[in-house]
Image 1 (cartoon, helix red, strand yellow):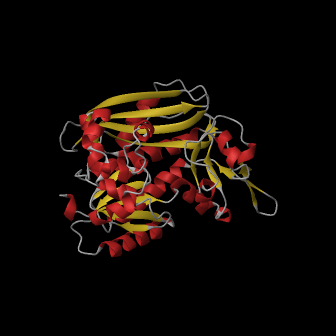
Image 2 (cartoon, helix red, strand yellow):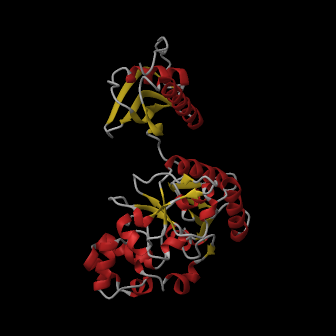
Length: 383
């Protein structure tokens, strides 16, 4: 199966950091680190320039969410403690994470790709697999068109690997970062794949990598040359077989283009904590907008919801949730808001709110349940 397939893996380049650089273009070319819960936004000086926090000034247990390639060159990588990262790059710029912006840019780049190649497996906020097999264009032209569409939609670059399967495509997309295109077939495996460290195979983690090293296996080529019996003896039959096949670039997994959706949710984290009475009007507006976005998501995906829920995170970081099951499934914004308002009445609103969310679950076809919805008056919110 894999010999005639064309599977692409698209990975956005330093995604979170790249989104931040769109907001702060003066930081391009500098080591920038994103992370830390208590990092403040940049301050504007009287002359209009911005003053940024430096990694050396950070104190706490925060970790690196992402870093620019300039920071990575200094030894700063995702999931590293910020205090440790400061030892490598004390003068690096430190920015807080903006997850709402990252989700927005994620939706944009995926929608742009779908206009060219709609058979997509969503693998996370910054990466997708794309099946190009049935498209008539050659791989290089497709890759260039996809990259151009992503850049037009986001202003960001991505790297693409195109190979006969998902395993090789994942490796290939990382070979010419950033802003790269790598196209490989089975004949390229000895020259391009086998010299790489065995850990570059997605699925070989630290423990397996250490175990392979103890067996004298450091590269993918050495793994490919190892007897299958040796691998099965040390890793078990199933894992040993997989390691042998992976090292030879064999992967028959199909793209999972559609996944069953369990729920739809929208939430908003506020720039400042909002008071349930003093900021009632602002909270009510946000609440209505969240319900409208949930309704729009349901309608776009062709679902209706039987259970509506809300989520609050208070100033002390306590999280409270409430749910309400309806007599009939709905995708109507007004019905969702009424149900969410009922949930809200069951929560004691005695302190400031950091986050507000609305969730729709118990999804089904909108025509599966024809019972009439409850007629309820509009309920006052936040007071």
